[in-house]
Image (cartoon, rainbow, N blue to C red; front, side, top):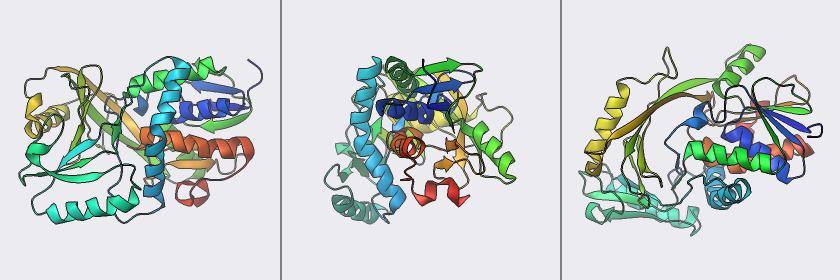
Length: 345
C-alpha cells in the first residue's frame, strides 16, 4: 500500500464507514484497530435503526431522517463491495400506544405526513392489526412506522472491513504507525483520552447488555416498548436490548439484568415465551456529553480529528456522518452541524 493519506484509529462502524467513503473519493486509507473488528460497541447484537418521533423537528432529527433515508443504498454498496451481507432491511417498527396516549400518537401520524416527506408513514392501528410478531398493548392501540430498519451489527462491521480491503484500504489489527491525517474513532476509550487531553469531561462510556434468542421471524417488524428493542434478524434470531448502565465494574460481563430484559421482552411479545436463549452480550458505548456524535478537529492537534460518540445511533447515522467527516478530512470543507462539532467543546 502507498503512504496513506488518512489513518483511522478504530474499526467500529464510525471508523470503517469513514474509511470506505474516503476510499470511494480516491484517498489512500489505513485503519488501525487494537483489538478486532467491532471489538467495542459496534460488536453488539441489537441493530435497531430507528427515527426520532415526528414532532418538535430540529437539525438533529432532520439529519437522522436523512441518514435513515440513505441507509439502504449505503449498505447495498457495502454488500456489493465486500461480499458480506450486513443484514440490512427496512421492515418498520411496532410500538404499543400507552394508556391515554392515543391523541398524541394520532397527532404524530399527522405531522409525519409532512416531516417524513412521503418516504415513510407513522400509522396508528388497533393492536390486532399490528404486523409482525404481535405485542401486548393494554390501550388496544399500536404505532406502526415504516421508516425503522435493522441490520446485524457484527456482520455489518465485517462487511465494511471487507469492502475497505477490497477497495484497496488496509486494516491492521494490533499496533502500527499512524501516518497522514489521523482520525480517532476509538469509542469510549477515545472519549476518555480526549477528556484527559482537554482537562475536562467531554464524554463517557455507558454499558449496555443484550440477549439473543433463537426465533425465526426474518421479515417481521421490530418492536419498541418502554425503552426495550426487540429486533428480528434474518438468521433466525431475535435480539433483545438493551440496558443503559452508568456505574459498572466490568464492561464486558453480563449479569442478571439480562434476565430482566428477557422477562420484559416475553411479557410484551408472547411469541418469544418459549424462544431459547443462545447468547448474551455486554459492551461499553461511547456517549458524548452533548449526547450527539462528536466530530471535527482534535483541539490543539494539527492534522488530527475526532469521530466518536455514536451512542445508540451510531449505525443509523454513520453513512451520512462519514461523508461529512470525509469532507473535512480530505477537503477541509466543514459541513458538520455545530451541535456535533468539536469547536463547541
